[in-house]
Length: 280
Ligand code: FES
Image 1 (cartoon, rainbow, N blue to C red):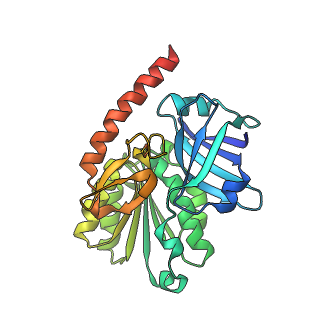
Image 2: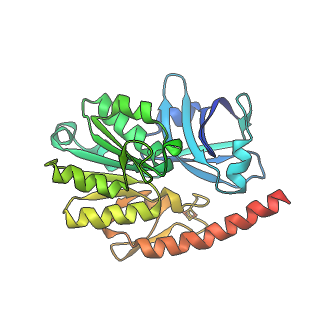
């Protein structure tokens, strides 16, 4: 059992949990995920790691209620425990294994959308701890849905907040801010975009035009995270890949987003059904 040490509701239906998971905390790297199960009969939920503390042996996860499994997780309180907390799984972010001196020469831009801010955070933090300050754009629908602003501010070189409705920070989509920054003369060598599929699709469309190499994380299309369900099957550069086994990060300019989103829709419906059933 994996004890929950802290629970916070960051925004409506978005939860932050610090979990005691010594082995995961010792081995995990930015970009990797865990599979969580509230109890032995609950569905498996894959979640990208938001933070970890190797000394304390804790791992932080952030999730949004999207169905029965996450609803069950949200009912847990500090002192409760997860039945399963398996990981670290998936490949770490590519830059983690790059030569540090080469990495220091690169200007990196991170683009986070909604709950995607959580997996972006450990990547920016990892770089910051090595003396590399990346620029970060965080987008949310409204001010109320913005998460981890203070945490991100502490590790980002420059932090740009944008809300779709203009209720806080800049106004508009993250793509507008990317265009604005490039228009202001900012130059980047690589972009990392994590958020809803539709956001990643449009970021990639823009960065392709800007000839800015872009990495995306396909965590949103994972369902069981085990390579068994097939939900995360995606075509990347004409080849079939599984986000949970081959990713979750891929070259965004090679991803067939439309196909992946179609697949995601089907599973969303199934998850929706399971949610309704659980409420009966
Ligand atoms: Fe089920 Fe990858 S999430 S196969």
